[in-house]
Length: 170
Image (cartoon, rainbow, N blue to C red; front, side):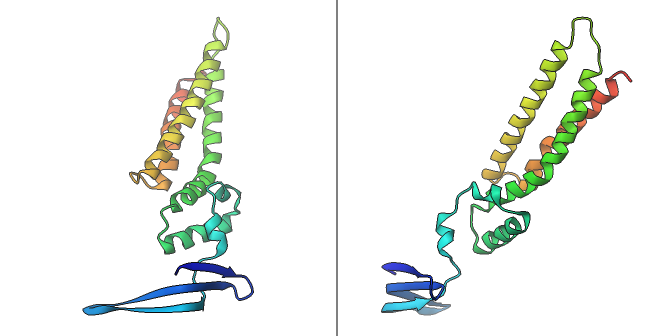
């Protein structure tokens, strides 16, 4: 269509100078034209104003609905919503894992003070965030699924926390 205008009264689109191409297998395509058409397309006006940050504010039920809708449409930006969904599941576990690491690191009493252990703990937390961001990049490039990318840093740091807890004095 040359132009498409959203009509809120009919909850549909008003098309001007439109073309409809009918594909039939093995037969030549038919093209129909017209001046004006009112139609309902599975595309809302709000779909044009999507922002990547909006998925962070959606409740879980709406986020799941957005993922289903984007998957149905074949939207390439569905990865942002999938990352957010998995981030909501993994971040509480990461807080628990980092807390275990902090307890294991602070249980060691050294003669020089706790400066080294504090720096090590802050460094490990910084590396966790960096690892999490790198794993998100694998989702954007299509190398890894969103679920695996969000859980991978937790699995690695769970192993590090287990080692630190094992060597910590009881």
